[in-house]
Image (cartoon, rainbow, N blue to C red; front, side):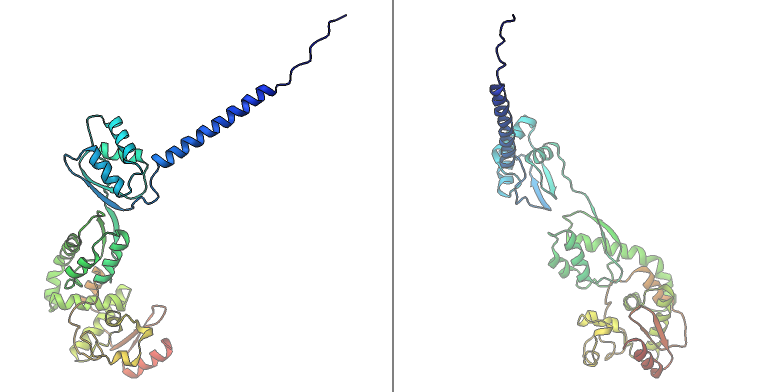
Length: 330
């Protein structure tokens, strides 16, 4: 007979230790994650689109204190620890740094130890027909720290001479630099046209004022030249221009919002109550509108209007113009 075998022991103890190890592992991972979140993760109030200067001679301790005060890091202690650990005796690199999005303390330390300033020009489109105010709003919309009020003050007499184009500016660009860049671009574009302007017999100022009206009144090149011919003809005949495009500049209203009372407002830019050109441009015109101003197309028309779809309708007489208004604007 075979001797009786002992029954196999249940693996309860082994299962117990495996379960405990799993829980210990999970606890350890959770503790690490918590430690990371508390010590190394970006602060919830990490500043966005901020410039920070590190000056020559600044110590790691001084930079750590500065970064903690502005919530760039959660802990100045761990910033100093990592900076000393990875940087050794090298220390931080002086310069102007740009932080656009949250970084862990590792990322922040890496950048100031390697001089990764991250200041890159950004592309900003300034469309044709924008006003000085529009330009300020556009740039401030991209760069929240842009000094909008200073720009408006410095550019108050620059309307019409800030050339609309695509520009590349650094996030810390100053208002004076924006104005200088746009005026330099204007002169670069207008200088080749100087002989044609001279032959046309108008001053540069009058051409730019007319171009700003044309920019707002018509969209297509040929249409702009026809409108140019009509407006110059009205001036020659001593007729008021009666251009609706001036009203956004006066009271913010467009053609379809104007009332009879608006047309009667006594304002230097109201081309219904004042004859001649307005005292200055109403926007910053593009090259196409400027060229249209000095290359008008002759036509038998004295009136025009644009319907809600942007189609242009011309008239020889005021009666025809009134009929067009009833047909296309009512």
